[in-house]
Length: 255
Image (cartoon, rainbow, N blue to C red; front, top):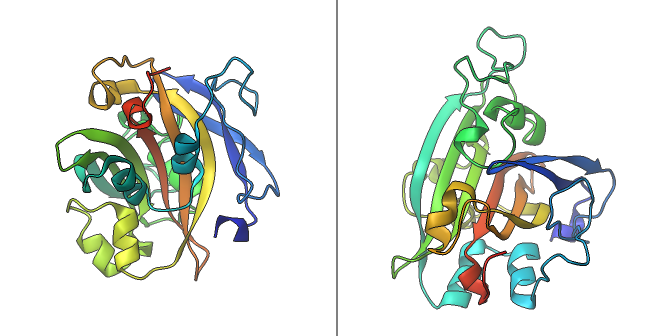
């Protein structure tokens, strides 16, 4: 259960293009008592009175600790699989090593999160792996971007994933190239995990816009959340995931 974990809750506080800047840790906050929605992504922790309201279905998906694919299957009546948009793996390099990408201009070899959509153009995969997944030198880092797609071909959501592969069960790593979501693979491997909700609210659709709705622009705000999955047995972080959802899923126009 989420409420069993005493952890840190982050906030969305700035958006640069389609990238999320996350900081503002709130020490000692109960993740089980989810943080308030942040619709404007300013320096405030709460949505303003003029922010779009969140209906029960949205809150169930954004704040719930169940499998995303199961929630989508219940809402849509469709079987949900993933379609891989982008996937790569590389060894984690720590600061001080020659190939560490500390240059915010991206002039060296480390891939950058502006190729995806999780954090900020100032963060490299290495930075986030070290800071948010407690990564260590030599860890095998996975970067994965997928569409959550129904058996009718409709995209109902997207997921941007960062994972430390060598902490995952062998069965899971073997099936990373399949159409199964990581969460479902972990369940199948019988690995107990804790989902730590980091942030929820609305984010710009970014370069996912055309896939989440024909009427969306990159600036259109869509329901979104960021959470981390942690191995319940070892306490070690496994994945950090940002999910966006098509507004049509909840029966309303984009923000």
